[in-house]
Image 1 (cartoon, one colour):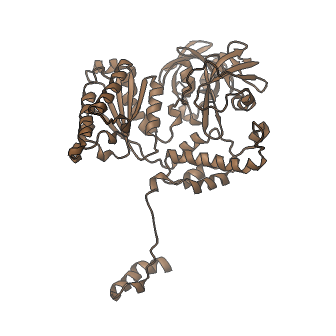
Image 2: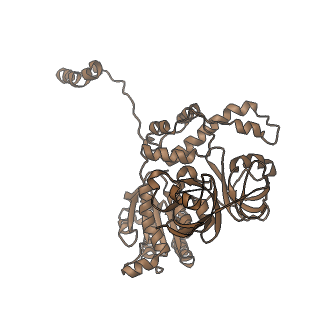
Image 3: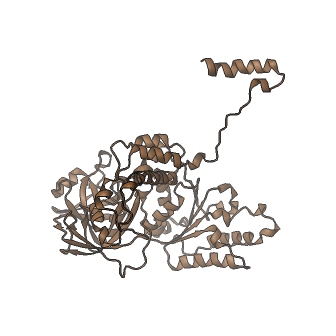
Length: 483
């Protein structure tokens, strides 16, 4: 429910942003709410959660009107220190033009770390509102994203970055860079699955008292299964980021040790560390490698037997109810020990499927939202012709298309120069032909193991059986040839 506090402020419920708005500091609200605050499209508002952050206002789509919500992306939610379904107070502000802004890279392997890159970076973040301490994102060279912390602005307060803003890069004292954070808007085609996972994970982590009131134990685990590349690991990272939980990612083979008891000790250490830092999420990737069916193990598999038993014991012994959630993921669920799959250990099993056409369209939108696409590029057409592609395949397709576009300007690049001229970068454009070239390089994972070969066998190679051959010709061959 919307609460109107005064003529200059509103309180609205936070919801996910549209995928195309990610990284653009856009907030979408009902046009009626815009009217209440005297806002026009493109005005700047202040979002007041546990801390303040600015955003550019836009109207929400018709299907989201009347719900009294504000749609902001994961970066804005992080800047305001709030989560989905929480309430925020918004008000109109008048930002000052940014004369100078100092940024510090937060992302690993960021290529935009030198003052020489400032002009190109400025073109990517032109028009963004910013406040000292905020995180902002620039998407460049296709779908590669870089996160930056706003270290300082001149003047102070909320500023609007523009073409005249002087951008300075600061790399000293920034600490260890991390991967770009993942939010729900970075996952396409899995809306239903994400909703089910949120029910099982966010509620126990954020509101454990609900389960105490109901007199039931909070869910302790979720089991994700599906083909490689469909987004299982991405979902786990997004959930951890959105819940602000301590996140531990372990791969099954990493647990196995060569000495007696070493594997079990590593596993116990992971769970003990998570309980110390609760609320926490433990993500076990390739769980089939440490918890296979015990009845199918021979006598030489004593280590694996002990690891399975230890994992079962740890899952049963999570004393901090609801505050340590275990997410297991595998590509081959039928090889998992059945004792692991009973309720109380993994309370819900969720299939992460190969995306359909609409899912592929969402994923393509995510991986091409930072691309300079030519006018002839049709994401709808690409979604139609990429049957069998999973999320990882579509990401590779976007990357290959960008590389195909890059190859066309390689002859114009002087490799003796330290930097590629800004004007050359601005001419980069990804066309539909680039995507067609990329299709030749990227093979869909879902049908990679399917191979169809037309046999070179003639009727004359089959001896005898004349009556049967004649019947087959009439029933099968003739309709195909003469229909």
